[in-house]
Length: 360
Image (cartoon, rainbow, N blue to C red):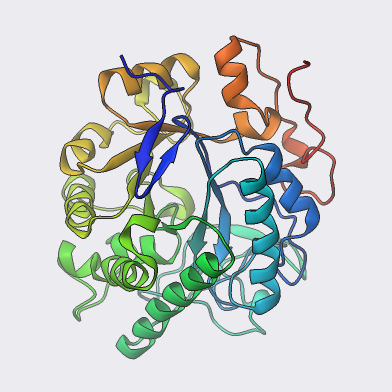
């Protein structure tokens, strides 16, 4: 019987367990988006994970709209990620980094007053902190031209190359949570009438072009993709969740990516993101590679998912914040510490690298 603590093959690597650390935005990379020694220490402490998927990391200045989030588009940022990779590898760990472009959720405050970009001129609902204040509401984006789409595809590939050159083991393409790729995928935000809009395959074209370009650059065995099919963050939605996202799973399966990472809590969990649509089983049938599930799992439900074959590995978020040695705690049957949510996006070491591992 397979358990969470059993090894698993992923691409050309063997991961030491199936307890995966989720990409968690923590806001410790400073104004220039450079991972510091503190960031390297944070990930080093969590190298017991089968795989660390490091936090969402901007592929360009245009796509970076979160305070103190990291990037991978400058030499200095790349050197910062090299220190992270070295720290994790020094503890025998494996680490991918998640690549994102925030699209319509980038406030003009981050880009010199320019409009954000997206699939179409559809404003999302929400606000974020910017360098000029808290709760700054999103504005209507401008639609990317076909030639500009190609440039953003290339930005993903360039960031992936920087990640591998920095010594990271691979990249995860962020196609979830209402950001740029998701804005192309969903028909609530994609109103285009060209080859990137209309039909499901057309709306998936941008994502698949990113996947192809990144795979050609670094190898498909070093590429994962994250989707959140029923997440309605920022008011994003789709009129045919099932058809859109099962088709996405089929196309990603054909592309031969290393894994598909699905953020979708089960309706029975009562999780805030849970939806009755619940597409995980259908998407699992469509994707035959390594399938990662994420969304309110504890040790028992994670073990059940792996045992039943509904997932190959389970991704944990907040549990890894407060328990840097989470797999060891699972193995020992030890209680878990609770994370302090007031420090999730703050600055400094408190609530970041000061959670203690098991004694002895």
